[in-house]
Image (cartoon, rainbow, N blue to C red; front, side, top):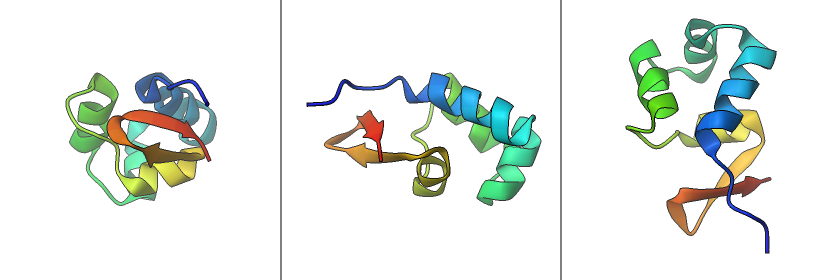
Length: 68
């Protein structure tokens, strides 16, 4: 069984490496900057598009993620 991942941290790292800014990531993912910010703060769950782009998939609950 794989260990649960802190998706907020993983998405921050992915944004820094792939897009440089949250604005660029939001454009690529087809969402608002405020949605990206809410996800990174833990206020909202990430979209499937965000997860797939970063190499993750949702498992069991919105709080558990594993590498795809």
